Image (cartoon, rainbow, N blue to C red; front, side, top):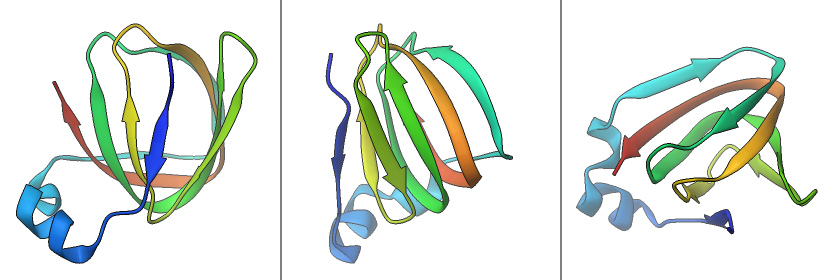
Length: 89
């Protein structure tokens, strides 16, 4: 299972209505997480290193658009407080 990280243009963000998605925030902490649904999110602030169960580490930061697949188990290591728009599918 792969975490997909990319940058979207402002036009893509507008077209998809991402700025109307709910906002989730998290302070500096480390916690395990398993995705029960696919998730897409746009990181507004912060930085996190997500380590998957197979040991792969993915750094995610402000401005990144991220897709997490359903069934992914990982550990979030939030190094700078996170604020993100998200959508579950």
